[in-house]
Length: 160
Ligand code: ADP
Ligand code: MG
Image (cartoon, rainbow, N blue to C red; front, side, top):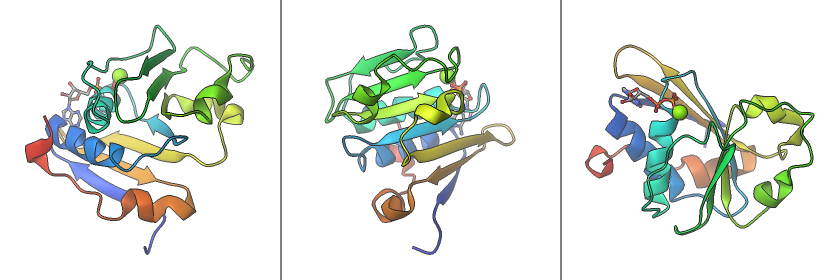
């Protein structure tokens, strides 16, 4: 691949879920994904697609008040963290059991625990443009660009 990231524009929540669903199918145990974007950008919407792509039936909602939510019933476990309320002094929470465990970990507000993150993460950034348009950048570790980005696309029919 020519570049070390892939870039998408979605025009609806459905398109964002579709992209996320297709991305989720490429994930492997031990993947850590940081999910960045302002309030209302579409992080929760994206996570709904991830849940669908992993075959999780339970609705994915925001873990803001719980720090972490675990979903065990899909193809691989999903750990969904929102560390907004934490800072990097919080080191004794057993992070590595998630980051190096059997599931995939999505971290919202990951910059707050930057020193605790593994070196290799898949960075996803959602930027709100006008109305229903979002720019979604997916930046895997350099040696994982093929696995994550190659052929990754939006197919809206499957987005709900
Ligand atoms: P966050 O979790 O980042 O705060 P949410 O996913 O909860 O954001 O909210 C995103 C809002 O923007 C939802 O109301 C959703 O319907 C709307 N929206 C409009 N267009 C899009 C799009 N292309 N992708 C994702 N969400 C969109
Ligand atoms: Mg949210």
